[in-house]
Amino acid sequence: MKEADTLRLSFYQPDIPQNLGTTIRLSACFGVKMDIIEPCGFPLTAKSLKRATLDYGNLAQVNRADSIETYLSEAKNEGERVVLFTTKGATPLQNFKFLPKDRLLFGRESAGVPDEVHNACDARVVIPLVEGARSINVATAASIALFEALRQTGGLS
Image (tube, rainbow, N blue to C red; front, side, top):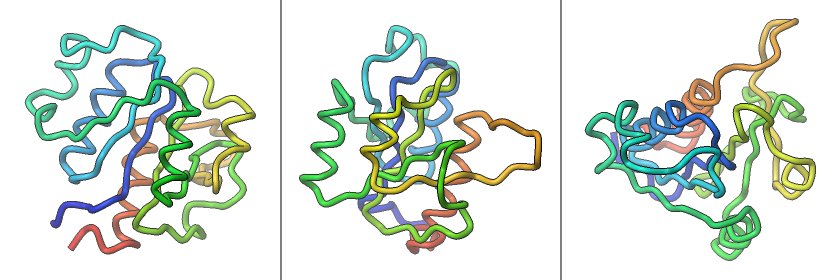
């Protein structure tokens, strides 16, 4: 597998350390950059993430954005689309066409993203679930989304 050039995983104000640790490990294993949009709902320390990241933390390329405004501005300046994964998404995952410079954005486990962030994104995608199911774990959603984005953009070869 080759390292992805520009595809990124991004997390808005994460609030569960174990999920963030799992996604740092995910980004490291697939060679994609990761963004953490502050503030976190917990102290973002090596100790709080160590259990979930194991020894993968050193392989990860993690950028911390001090606000959603900074994050969105950076994406725009780099010509990168921000693709929000949301239960309120307009496009089912299997119908969405990813681009190599997409940033895959995931909201807080407890509350998603506020409407102003939802509306500021370039695209909104939903992972279809069976009727009656509300949502899946954010780390699981990130895994599903990242794999599909890498598959579509040739990042798995």
